[in-house]
Image (cartoon, rainbow over all chains, first blue to last red; front, side, top):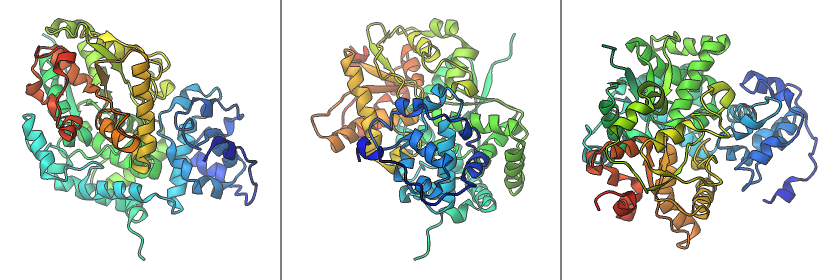
Amino acid sequence: MTSVEEKAPIDIDEVDRDFVQMIKRTGGTNIQNCYQCGTCSGSCPAGARTNYLVRGIIRKALLGLKEQCISAPELWYCTTCYTCTDRCPQDVSPTDVIKAIRNIAVAEGYMLEPHQKVAQKVLEAGHAVPLDKESWEQLRMKVGLEPKPPNASSHPEAVEEIKRIAKKTGFDKLVADKEE
Amino acid sequence: MTKRPSFIHFLGCIIPHRYPSIQKATEIVFEDLDMELLPMEGASCCPAPGVFGSFDRVTWASIAARNLTIAEQAKADVTTGCNGCFASLWDANHELKHDEELRQAVNEALAEVGREFKGTIEVTHYVDALYDTAGLQKIRKHVVRPMTGVRMALHPGCHWMRPKLVKQKDDSEKPHIFRELCEATSAEYVPYKDELMCCGAGGAVRTADLKVALDFTKQKFDSILAAGGADMIVTPCPFCELQLDAGQVEIQKHFGEEHTYTFDVLHVSELLALAFGHEPEEFGLATHLQYMQRKSEPNWERLGIKI
């Protein structure tokens, strides 16, 4: 998609009046400071190569266009580099707004499959990038380290704790494979 | 005699599981500088800030807080060599100290495993431990193999210093701390236009769309070449290192053979270990994934080693 396509007027269809409050409660506290200057998008390395437009998403959010915001695939192109946050003249912290919208998207079932797999790995192994092959242990020995580090890779009880925490917050169900 | 500085060592995922040379180099460098690293038994994924923070804030903060309670029990400040781990642990520590509602939710989750976040310790990055605790003067004294003449491009990455108003460490538009630390080795700093740009891996983008993530990385490489090239790229983050190191092999695959880059990518701990006179075999510099996949080895001559 090109940036020209992105410039199409915003389609105000179904408005959710609670969306802004929901974002504020989820970490995007300062969203209402935004006066649409576009410093965020002008600073954004993701926006320079994809159709991800921070300003546009924030505008849509402020209009209450929840479904358009949470279902947009480009929502997931933000690398959370915080350059926009450091440059925003209104202290909106656009990165935190985007993360809040992502939280809401995930709660409503918009989670990419590869992300779901990473989340599952943490619940299974305690690590997003686990020590899942013998060759990784050999690599460690090659540099003069013990085969398993003192983290969850050698502490199964730590993984059990992670599972119990995720059960308590409901995260285990959120990332579980959906039944066909 | 002053007490030996001591930190509990949060390894994270990528350092111990993919780039163990960074772990080994860090142990060597901290020992040289007389700083103690305590093992952090049973620590888990930080968990990845851009990934877990994007999924569910309370779960992210709870798993991070569980890690923090291990340090609280040991009564030790944390140090970590990963910008992502640092972001998760530092941010969670900061937010939990200031957000009563979040702290309550997190402690309810932690109660399930008999833990409680108390807010009694601080989180540091290796860069902080090296720059603030050891100090440049001491570091310079240990440099017995000055990297004079080696052209060094820097990739400071994002989460150690951003958001700047919250982290209050360095000016993220014109940072100097990481540069001064690396320049202590006498390597020649090569400025390039996109030095402060993200490597592309963070925020769950590498997982969501590898080619988009690599496109960031490629832009950085081209920017370094436009500045006259560099003999090595130095970063304080293993996830950035993975992206810049193994990313070169991936770029070749996704963008074509004409995009072949051969940068040696070093973590700042590895750079210091070399400058402190240690041989690359002592910490396994040649085990970086780029070399394993390409069946190549570091460009020793360009790095000024083994001539």
